[in-house]
Length: 542
Picture 1 (cartoon, helix red, strand yellow):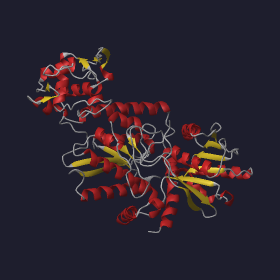
Picture 2 (cartoon, helix red, strand yellow):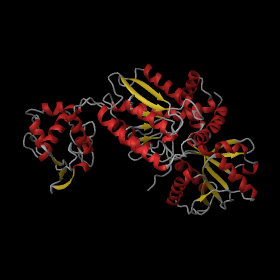
Picture 3 (cartoon, helix red, strand yellow):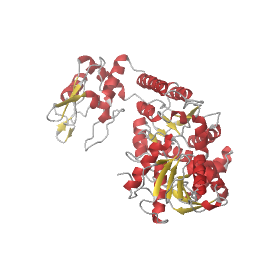
Picture 4 (tube, helix red, strand yellow):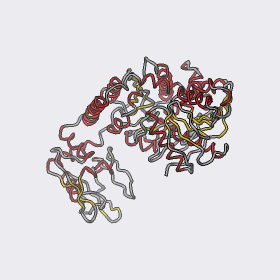
């Protein structure tokens, strides 16, 4: 494989998503805000009902018990209360539902030094007989003793449960519903998890301006799934990929997502390409507890979304670090400039993070054809606006340093005048220098099997990384897969060597696999690209 050709391909390929997304988005930005809000609200209600009714064939009594277990809500919609701690402080049960500590799978999870026990009914019903642990006996539970434990905090042997365990005030009907559901809890599987199959889903356009990108992502995913299945799948389950077309506007994308959740009942989403859903995707996924491994929506991240590569803000902070350490810019030498209303909030976020790192940037400035006065300009926006800014600055006789994320503006640099040579610096999440021999062989093998263009390597690597992180987390959670356990496993991934990027990893509250980027200088004419600062993690926001 010719590394120079691939590098040129990375440069060209990085610009595609921005321009293509702009074209795709034009079909739905004209919708009235009130209509869009109403549609989203209706979809959320529908998906909530689907999530409650389709996960397992439960009786109405068990369904009511499930709602009480997960949400702390009575079947009569009456306000339930719980008593907490030695002082018996009363709080709404919805604040401390059973699932908040024991988990949706009932297995319990350590928090604050407390490890809630598993609620598996088979274990509870068998008990531990005459065995003594710490001087205490643990006999079997029955319906009546379970009710006593839940409502009064006392186990079948008369031992008082840990004070961290809330005591719930339940009606007889609510207690019966909860007991009925707990007896089925161990049988319940999340959607998409079957005896021999685990279903993954994605939304990829088959027509329109994003069709080619969708074709590449699909080829990478199908190839990766086939490779894993040839190795025996994951914990004896064959992976199945469900691909639906999100269509051309927000309404069709919403219907496609609903179908993935309703009819196809997928376990998790991987690298969807549906910018029509960006504004609300995080909210939709959180309602379902649905994990997504892939790119973060423009509207920002979500607890459910894990992005292998760094966001725009982290990439720009890497550029700022280079501006200080190598270019010698003064603390007040940077100006954050954005083009497009959709970039305004992100621009303000970048400015705030620059301040946290010791910069003194002026207020952010919206570019509207003016010549910005600054020693260095941190730009957020699309390639066309970046080219317009450079032209205006040239006409005004100004030559500041220009800093931008390659994924936004790289398509414009080839046409810049020679005066901008070594004045433009772009952030790249990865460069060919990151590629190990094994990583390069993986990428080359994929391209050969699927007939993919090396110039689309950026998109291919991004998708490969998402699939690698997902498969690694699935291997860690074992055969008893659940969405909740998958999210916990993803949070626990650290220093994953992809062979194509710097080491990736997540953590509690951290949903991007990298926190920084390589700094690449642009030489003109050409253009020629030279990595001038290696990847270094950007410090977390205080």
